[in-house]
Image (tube, rainbow, N blue to C red; front, side, top):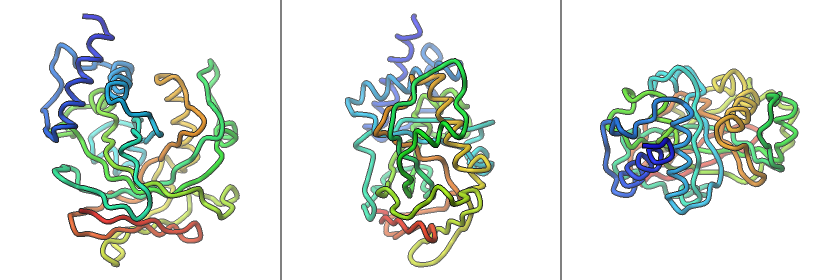
Amino acid sequence: MTATTSAHQAAAILLNNWKATTRIAALPEHCRPASRADGYATAAAVAEASGQPVAGWKIAATSEAGQKHINVEGPLIGRILRHRLLPPGAAVTLGDNIMRVAEAEFAFGFGKDVPPRAKPYDIEEALEAVSSLHLSIEIPDSRYSDFTKVGSAQLIADTACASWLVLGPAIAVPWRHIDLSEHKVSGYRNGEKVIEGTGKAVLGDPRKALTWFINEACTYCGGVKAGQFVTTGTCVIPYAVAPGDRISVDYGVLGTISASIV
């Protein structure tokens, strides 16, 4: 079996389980990704088979808490498909979601293509490619019955635990001078503050996470396209949500973003 055939077989299994809201313990051995590259090939096949355009990207496990949560050694990236993207204030269907958490994240919008090249991009070049900053709330999920046991390659294949992303408009407040690593973020549930963090949780700085993402995407995913975005990982420890909850995240001078869980 060729690597391409394996990727498409694994993608079909993952996508079928996503549509049916069912779970698997792991991908079958005959098509299970054995490496990071294999995982990204499968994730690309998932996006292709979905018939949905790729609206943007996510980074999973950019914080120590996030890495512990899914039991991986470092960050992973995944695609956000267009039909999984929601506006601020949206109702997010939790359904049989097994993670059942909300994550508060900074997202960067790309104003130009970032193509693969031999030399890694540095943080200044990464920021030059960015045209906007957005607030976002991610509600992740997994197609594995125990996502803590399958490892990085299979998690990457499963779009790095992507499910729903609530994405705000471009922030109108000037933001490039703000130290995002020290910027405070507070998560609320039903009007009560339940968690607080800073951008430092995201690989030390969301701008560092942005740069890491660009180089990872250029290595494994063909680069990044203008008009796409990347949400850079949670600034707070993921906090529990349930149907009936109203959640919001306060980013101080940068604004707030909210959603309801149904």
